[in-house]
Length: 128
Image 1 (tube, rainbow, N blue to C red):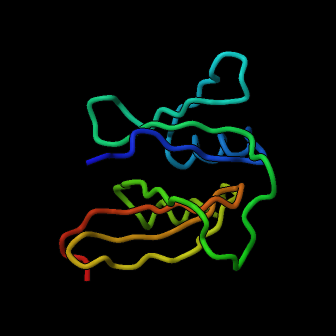
Image 2: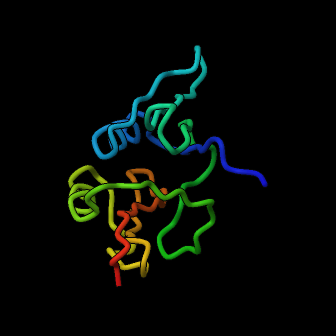
């Protein structure tokens, strides 16, 4: 069985995208040599999850009301309400408001400053 080991965020404004994710998720970004590529540290190696990368987008960005054309990543959060309130102030938008995933938790989808879709999920076995 194969598991995801890395993800990438494509951005028209790499500095703007890094600022968004630093402020919202607390992620760390480090440029990989002299390349226009930044490694993303999302947490400590001994905690569940994967790290990723950020790079300049080549070609047009996502368009509104277009079908999702991505492999959408969902990030575990401890307070979904607080996170969804922060997204607009950081330049993103809420694409799908908070909804229950019965017995699993609460899920919402947002778009970052570059129009990329991502999920945020708060575990809660009592969600209905």
